[in-house]
Length: 224
Image (cartoon, rainbow, N blue to C red; front, side, top):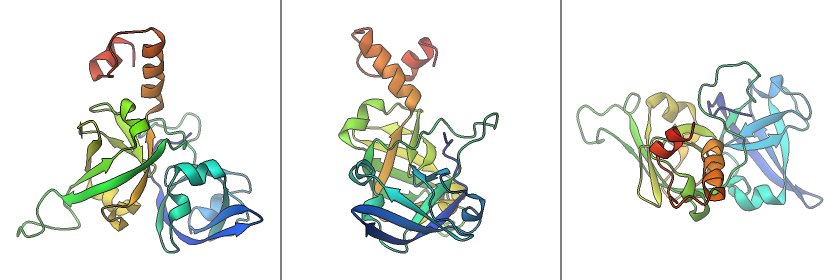
């Protein structure tokens, strides 16, 4: 399990085929040296198993489901990926429960500074940003205003949702510590809905409740 608090970024070195299996190689000084063969880690929101580790690199094989559902198979060498090690039992839950089971690829439609770049007050290092992501149709039912969502493995809060696109406020620390500052509009991004919202939605449907849209009020009333 992860919490969506990114520890560092890594650099994709290569994406190769080995006997029909796709394998990624990631340069990750600082994290690679702490891994053991078979350890799990989050790579841009995808839970993978570390293989063939050395102090600066690790490899991971990508199942067909991973290739079909995430953006990893489309990345080019040099791409930045977000890295997070699993959360140890008893550790503070800094973000929200992130499984590393990506629900689908969304599209980043905008990442704009809150202060316009033409403004004299604009400072790229310290400004907040507004992220907009068009989420896949199969994920939209789980988007809740002020709820959590993992984008590229980052635990984020939904500020607005128009039925298709989520709007999210991005702090300077998040912008610079993760791969967000390297992405351009149109980039595919991995989206994982909050597992607690998915559970609540399943329970709601099982009860045949006439209410079909999750709201913050419904979640609170039902103990979430």
